[in-house]
Length: 275
Image (tube, rainbow, N blue to C red):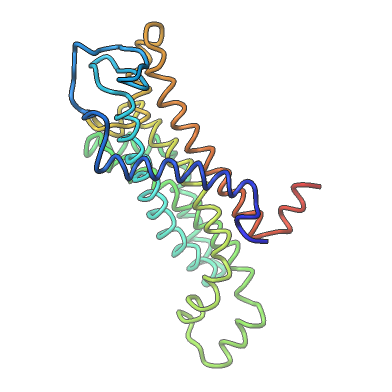
């Protein structure tokens, strides 16, 4: 079964490509400068001139939605890279060093997991101040135990397989075994998990920015736009609807993409889900 034969994968990929193309386009062109205030155009409804309307400062919402897509993608890439890079290393070490050392490593991961991203962000921003960088660091730290647990569970089941024993008998070192045999066999669940956590990272960044702990003005963030819109819900509902739809569109696309990857890479799970 190929990836494109899966309906969820096709739909999810299409939705995600729209966001990626919009983000790439915003790096070279937007209808207006999304950071420039135009008081004469404030709180205008959707029109040919402003397809998504304007905000309380007269800024074009469509331009800011385009700019916010870059922020969301960056947040997802950085946080998943932090969590996956450190989490996979921690999980592999725990799977290899069984017994007390492995359990100690996983308890360290559980300690990190005990602090939600919001609390970690509050702690970090209290020390270094609110910013997108600190928000991404907080979310990335929260993801480390997520990937560590998955890596340990999948890698531990492979360490005692016959082909690993044969590789050791042939004189292959442990690092080479990890690179040539362990990682390729656990890559599929890691990719699925990364796709799902990418969507969660976008929601987390939006939530932290909504609280004022993430992206700071005048940079565009979908969560920050929602926070600014709550005061004007009665007179300018488009200020909340547009960034809300952008978040929903992106998260839905990533979730469908993750479902498609999981069904294709593990047909047995797909069969169980449809029985």
